[in-house]
Length: 196
Image (tube, rainbow, N blue to C red; front, side, top):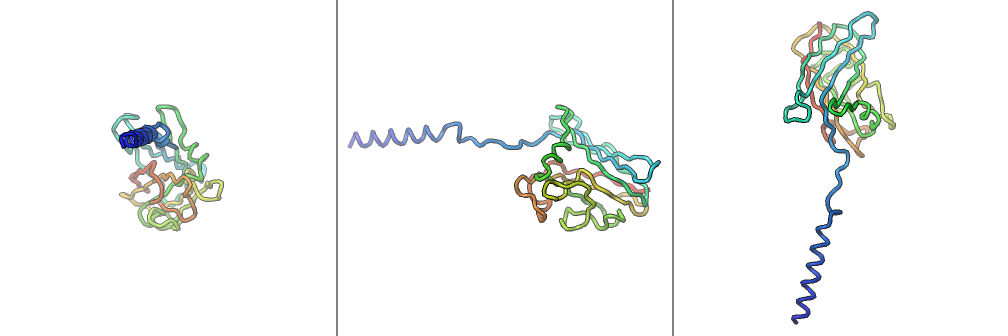
Protein backbone atom coordinates (compact mmCIF):
# COMPACT_ATOMS: atom_id res chain seq x y z
CA UNK A 1 0.00 0.00 0.00
CA UNK A 2 2.81 2.37 0.95
CA UNK A 3 4.64 1.52 -2.27
CA UNK A 4 1.56 2.24 -4.39
CA UNK A 5 1.04 5.65 -2.68
CA UNK A 6 4.70 6.47 -3.31
CA UNK A 7 4.28 5.62 -7.03
CA UNK A 8 1.17 7.82 -7.26
CA UNK A 9 3.03 10.71 -5.62
CA UNK A 10 5.92 10.32 -8.05
CA UNK A 11 3.56 10.21 -11.05
CA UNK A 12 1.63 13.35 -9.99
CA UNK A 13 4.84 15.19 -9.09
CA UNK A 14 6.32 14.39 -12.51
CA UNK A 15 3.10 15.52 -14.22
CA UNK A 16 3.08 18.80 -12.29
CA UNK A 17 6.70 19.51 -13.22
CA UNK A 18 6.03 18.74 -16.90
CA UNK A 19 3.02 21.08 -16.84
CA UNK A 20 5.27 23.99 -15.81
CA UNK A 21 7.67 23.85 -18.72
CA UNK A 22 8.40 27.03 -20.72
CA UNK A 23 6.75 25.70 -23.87
CA UNK A 24 3.37 26.14 -22.17
CA UNK A 25 3.85 29.92 -22.34
CA UNK A 26 1.96 31.26 -25.37
CA UNK A 27 4.03 32.90 -28.09
CA UNK A 28 3.04 36.51 -28.79
CA UNK A 29 2.54 37.00 -32.52
CA UNK A 30 2.42 40.41 -34.21
CA UNK A 31 2.92 42.42 -31.03
CA UNK A 32 1.09 45.75 -31.23
CA UNK A 33 3.15 48.48 -32.90
CA UNK A 34 3.97 51.72 -31.13
CA UNK A 35 2.43 54.56 -33.15
CA UNK A 36 3.74 58.06 -32.47
CA UNK A 37 2.63 60.02 -35.55
CA UNK A 38 -0.34 59.87 -37.92
CA UNK A 39 -0.63 62.36 -40.79
CA UNK A 40 -3.47 62.79 -43.27
CA UNK A 41 -2.18 64.36 -46.50
CA UNK A 42 -4.91 65.63 -48.82
CA UNK A 43 -3.46 66.40 -52.28
CA UNK A 44 -5.83 68.29 -54.61
CA UNK A 45 -6.30 66.63 -58.00
CA UNK A 46 -6.46 70.11 -59.58
CA UNK A 47 -2.90 71.47 -60.03
CA UNK A 48 -1.98 74.66 -58.20
CA UNK A 49 -4.20 74.14 -55.16
CA UNK A 50 -2.55 73.75 -51.76
CA UNK A 51 -1.94 70.37 -50.15
CA UNK A 52 -3.62 70.01 -46.75
CA UNK A 53 -2.19 68.05 -43.83
CA UNK A 54 -3.87 67.06 -40.58
CA UNK A 55 -1.73 65.47 -37.89
CA UNK A 56 -1.85 63.53 -34.64
CA UNK A 57 1.12 62.94 -32.36
CA UNK A 58 1.89 60.96 -29.23
CA UNK A 59 3.65 63.59 -27.08
CA UNK A 60 5.52 61.10 -24.88
CA UNK A 61 6.24 58.29 -27.35
CA UNK A 62 6.09 55.06 -25.36
CA UNK A 63 4.81 56.80 -22.21
CA UNK A 64 1.29 56.69 -20.74
CA UNK A 65 -0.16 59.59 -22.74
CA UNK A 66 -2.37 58.83 -25.74
CA UNK A 67 -1.91 60.10 -29.28
CA UNK A 68 -3.67 63.47 -29.71
CA UNK A 69 -4.87 65.57 -32.65
CA UNK A 70 -2.55 68.56 -33.19
CA UNK A 71 -3.89 70.01 -36.46
CA UNK A 72 -7.37 69.89 -38.01
CA UNK A 73 -8.42 69.03 -41.56
CA UNK A 74 -9.43 72.22 -43.42
CA UNK A 75 -10.42 71.50 -47.03
CA UNK A 76 -11.75 73.55 -49.93
CA UNK A 77 -15.38 73.12 -50.93
CA UNK A 78 -16.26 71.20 -54.09
CA UNK A 79 -12.69 69.96 -54.55
CA UNK A 80 -11.33 66.49 -55.31
CA UNK A 81 -8.47 65.21 -53.14
CA UNK A 82 -6.26 62.13 -53.06
CA UNK A 83 -5.65 61.21 -49.42
CA UNK A 84 -2.52 59.40 -48.19
CA UNK A 85 -2.25 58.30 -44.57
CA UNK A 86 1.22 58.26 -43.00
CA UNK A 87 1.66 56.15 -39.85
CA UNK A 88 5.01 56.19 -38.08
CA UNK A 89 6.89 55.07 -35.01
CA UNK A 90 9.39 57.91 -34.65
CA UNK A 91 11.04 56.15 -31.67
CA UNK A 92 12.41 53.41 -33.95
CA UNK A 93 12.07 55.31 -37.27
CA UNK A 94 9.58 52.72 -38.54
CA UNK A 95 7.20 53.40 -41.43
CA UNK A 96 4.16 51.56 -40.13
CA UNK A 97 2.00 52.56 -43.11
CA UNK A 98 4.42 50.63 -45.36
CA UNK A 99 4.02 47.60 -43.07
CA UNK A 100 0.22 47.95 -43.23
CA UNK A 101 0.39 47.88 -47.05
CA UNK A 102 2.87 44.96 -47.06
CA UNK A 103 0.53 43.06 -44.72
CA UNK A 104 -2.60 44.36 -46.46
CA UNK A 105 -4.40 41.01 -46.26
CA UNK A 106 -4.47 41.55 -42.47
CA UNK A 107 -5.36 45.27 -42.34
CA UNK A 108 -8.16 47.63 -43.32
CA UNK A 109 -8.85 51.28 -42.58
CA UNK A 110 -12.48 52.29 -41.99
CA UNK A 111 -13.82 55.85 -42.18
CA UNK A 112 -16.65 57.80 -40.56
CA UNK A 113 -17.77 61.37 -41.27
CA UNK A 114 -20.84 63.58 -41.05
CA UNK A 115 -23.58 62.86 -43.58
CA UNK A 116 -23.01 64.42 -46.99
CA UNK A 117 -19.80 66.26 -46.06
CA UNK A 118 -18.45 64.76 -49.26
CA UNK A 119 -20.15 64.61 -52.64
CA UNK A 120 -18.04 61.49 -53.29
CA UNK A 121 -18.34 59.24 -51.44
CA UNK A 122 -21.84 60.07 -50.28
CA UNK A 123 -23.16 58.96 -46.91
CA UNK A 124 -21.31 58.80 -43.60
CA UNK A 125 -18.55 56.26 -44.23
CA UNK A 126 -18.28 52.52 -43.66
CA UNK A 127 -17.77 52.32 -39.89
CA UNK A 128 -21.39 51.37 -39.30
CA UNK A 129 -21.92 49.45 -42.52
CA UNK A 130 -19.08 47.83 -44.48
CA UNK A 131 -20.94 48.09 -47.79
CA UNK A 132 -21.29 51.90 -47.58
CA UNK A 133 -19.19 53.72 -50.17
CA UNK A 134 -15.57 54.73 -49.62
CA UNK A 135 -13.29 55.47 -52.59
CA UNK A 136 -10.37 53.15 -51.83
CA UNK A 137 -7.37 53.53 -54.16
CA UNK A 138 -5.35 50.59 -52.81
CA UNK A 139 -6.05 46.87 -52.48
CA UNK A 140 -4.42 43.85 -50.88
CA UNK A 141 -3.34 40.62 -52.63
CA UNK A 142 -6.95 39.39 -52.49
CA UNK A 143 -8.32 42.52 -54.14
CA UNK A 144 -9.81 43.85 -50.89
CA UNK A 145 -9.38 47.49 -49.80
CA UNK A 146 -6.63 48.64 -47.43
CA UNK A 147 -7.24 52.40 -47.04
CA UNK A 148 -3.80 54.00 -46.85
CA UNK A 149 -4.69 55.63 -50.20
CA UNK A 150 -8.21 56.96 -50.87
CA UNK A 151 -10.02 59.62 -52.93
CA UNK A 152 -12.47 62.26 -51.68
CA UNK A 153 -14.51 65.08 -53.23
CA UNK A 154 -15.80 67.68 -50.80
CA UNK A 155 -19.30 69.11 -50.89
CA UNK A 156 -20.39 72.60 -49.90
CA UNK A 157 -18.84 74.65 -47.10
CA UNK A 158 -19.43 73.30 -43.60
CA UNK A 159 -17.87 73.73 -40.17
CA UNK A 160 -17.98 71.61 -37.04
CA UNK A 161 -17.76 68.29 -38.91
CA UNK A 162 -15.48 65.37 -38.06
CA UNK A 163 -13.38 62.84 -39.97
CA UNK A 164 -12.69 59.54 -38.16
CA UNK A 165 -10.02 57.04 -39.21
CA UNK A 166 -9.90 53.52 -37.71
CA UNK A 167 -7.16 51.04 -38.61
CA UNK A 168 -8.16 47.45 -37.89
CA UNK A 169 -5.76 44.52 -37.63
CA UNK A 170 -7.62 41.44 -38.91
CA UNK A 171 -5.03 38.64 -39.26
CA UNK A 172 -6.50 35.55 -40.90
CA UNK A 173 -10.06 36.90 -40.78
CA UNK A 174 -10.22 39.78 -43.30
CA UNK A 175 -12.82 39.11 -45.99
CA UNK A 176 -15.21 41.12 -48.14
CA UNK A 177 -17.70 41.07 -45.25
CA UNK A 178 -15.54 41.73 -42.17
CA UNK A 179 -16.47 44.97 -40.44
CA UNK A 180 -14.98 47.63 -38.17
CA UNK A 181 -16.00 45.43 -35.23
CA UNK A 182 -13.73 42.57 -36.33
CA UNK A 183 -10.12 42.28 -35.21
CA UNK A 184 -7.99 44.56 -33.05
CA UNK A 185 -7.94 48.35 -33.31
CA UNK A 186 -4.48 49.83 -34.05
CA UNK A 187 -5.68 53.43 -34.59
CA UNK A 188 -8.93 55.23 -33.76
CA UNK A 189 -8.60 58.98 -34.33
CA UNK A 190 -11.15 61.71 -35.07
CA UNK A 191 -10.07 64.99 -36.66
CA UNK A 192 -12.18 68.16 -36.63
CA UNK A 193 -13.11 68.85 -40.27
CA UNK A 194 -13.90 72.19 -41.88
CA UNK A 195 -14.80 72.73 -45.53
CA UNK A 196 -14.44 76.34 -46.75
